[in-house]
Each structure stands twice: as structure tokens, then as C-alpha cells.
Amino acid sequence: MKSSPVKAVLFDLDDTLWPLVPTLVKAEATLYDWLTEHIPGVVQRFSNDELRELRMELLPTKPEYQFNVWALRHAALTHACHLTSENKELVDQAMAVFSEARNAVTLFDDVVPGLASLSGQYMVGSISNGFADLAAIGIDQHFQTSIAAHQFGSAKPNPEIFLAACDALAIAPHEAVYVGDDPVLDIQGAQNAGLQAVWMNRFQRTLPDYIVPAASLTTLHELNAWLKRA
Image (tube, rainbow, N blue to C red; front, side):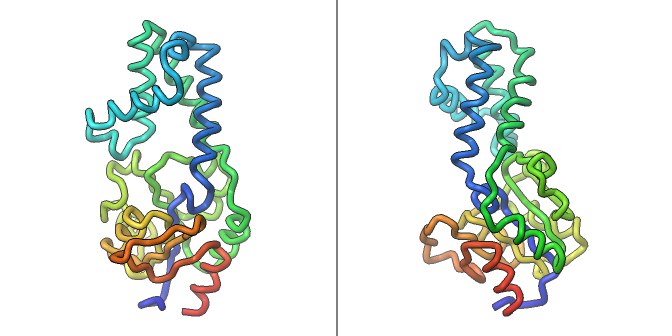
């Protein structure tokens, strides 16, 4: 049961409002096709998996890469161009292609009606470690605030990013319910910041024993019903 009246519902995005893996697979394939045409040297030298390995090699080299996935991808492509003597000036265009494809998500069926219902009763916001664009996706009208780690400067599970969303809505942390799929980043992170946390378990996963959400749900319809009951 909820411990206090809820004024706002805050959401994680990837794997909460849409599935992440198929989105990334398609976006990376779209980018690779573009690289084949415009920066062929990179494709001749690196497979998609090898580009992924290159990002992982760069990850520990700058603190910002821990919370700025866009910057990491940009840096990896720039480095790949350097290694293949390709034109680094094309990396911005490549990232624009990737970003457009990254926002071509397939929402879970309950998301549009669920957000429409929830946004009529509560303030709604999002907190994400990714760089999805809610306007490009077409659901930004339901959100009063949207905080992304790469813009904010730190990432979940840091309490600061949760508290920033509460501040943006002028509410206390305990007046917000945070909904996400990741046990540590979302549930534990939100609870450590003083928010109530609901686990959105769309993939029949199992929580660690030490993480106890206020509720475990599978759709936004269930979330709406839970909020009304409590």
C-alpha cells in the first residue's frame, strides 16, 4: 500500500514503456547501413559487435561516459574514423541517423491509453539514463518533466536525479511513485531518494530478495488500478 497521497507518477523509459533490445538492434543496423554508404572504411574494419567492443573500451576513459551514452557512441565512432583514416566530420550526421532510429520505438500496447489516463489524474514525468526523445516518439504531451542523465550530469541510481524530477514538479519525494524495470537503478535508486517505487515487470523476471517494491505490476492499466486502490 502507498504510504502517502500520490501527486506524481515518474517513469523509467527503456523496458518500461517500450522494449529496449529490439529498438537498439534496429537502430544499430540502420546506422551500420548508413556507415556502409558514407564511411565505408569503418565498416570494412569493424563489425557491429566490434564497434560495441570499442565503446566498452572507451567507457572507463572519461567519467561522463557513465551517464552520457550519446557521448560514448559519438566518441567511439570518432575513434573508429581516426583508426581508419575516415572523415570524422561525418560523425555528427551518423549520430543523427542513429538517434532518429533510436526513437523509432514500438510502445507496449498499454502505454498510450495508460499515460492518457494517468496524466489526467497525476503529474507525470520521466527519468532515464538513455537519450530517447519523447517528442520524437510522440508521447511528450503526457509529461510535465523529462530528465535524461546525459543532460542532467549524473545517472540513476544517484538520488540527485530523482530529487531533480521532484523539484521540477514542486513535490516532496514521498509524494511521487517511480515506475521502472531495473531492480537497482529504478527500485532501489528511487527508494534511496525517498520516492515510492513500483516494479514494472514486463518480462517475468525475479527480484533479488533484498529489493522490495511497493508493488510489482506488468502494465500501466495495473498501475492505474493499484493507485486507485491504495
